[in-house]
Length: 457
Image (cartoon, rainbow, N blue to C red; front, side, top):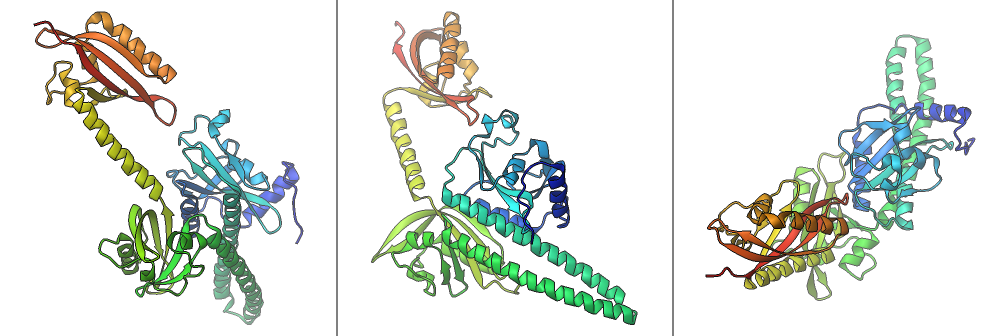
């Protein structure tokens, strides 16, 4: 078949490209589960929140699958990064979309983009599959190859869809041709053509299976397939083997040899639930006890399970994806424990502690912080109350110190007098450090204070 490698923007190439796209009859069609499943799989493989499968027409970019970007059906071609990804040979990476002026203020808060072109067998580029994130990430060569493999799987699905559409048309034509002998002859010709399409479909399915094998084995996250209810491991990729055992092949072995059936094993209960309901299940930071030699070790994983054998009356296999988040969970636990220790130290030192939300003026404060301004533990206390308690001559100075700390991302330190409701005045020493949201805007400030000069009796 002739290959069309011209990726330029000439009118002749664009017309030929659009003809190649239109033959698939996919623009502006309703969502289909097969494409949504591929997009969800991409999100799970790369652990990213957004995946789009787009087809690019004359003026519009149509989202055939949209996972994580709301209900938007597409966008203008002139405003889409997918147009650039479609015309490149490999994976298009944009580490920070905000660096491109026309995408800086995108309404979805997207910063990272990775897209691979959808290229037909005769060389026409008709769209892209992309994954997106709200923060910049490292997207290494292995991930690029996996994304290119997913692009080929998407094209396989498009070809199969076209074959199915042609089959439906053939069935309608078949019904019309039954009335006359000439129509029966014509039907035989159609059946021959249909047989050729079936042969082509089998070839596409073989290619798709090969792409799946590559994706399964090379995926950076742990993937396994378990038969139910016996819980026998049917398949396991390298990443899963590395989490569980030093063995090179665990297929055909009972799951209990690696995950003991002890009380509280949420993962095993999730497998049973998927088997009984026939529906997928997800959870995060699941505690998982696994055998490590002759002893058990505890890890934490994000889990996603889906039933297989959807064409049968009963699920007989469950595919699961595990992302090892043990280090993150332990780090979070250490932070939480450190916060408890720090809070105890602050209370023991007679320090006031608060977190202020700038947008609302709401404050989360310990009792000592309120007491330092003459408020009781049960009194409501807002950011404006803090300045109202301050003697007027200090207010502007303190606001300026806070503003400078925000602009320079520094700690502010100040001393000032406050007047309590009983009329007494007190000296306070205060410290504060601003915090920022993902857009770099100051959203909160964390503060400490202490009475440094008790009032005269």
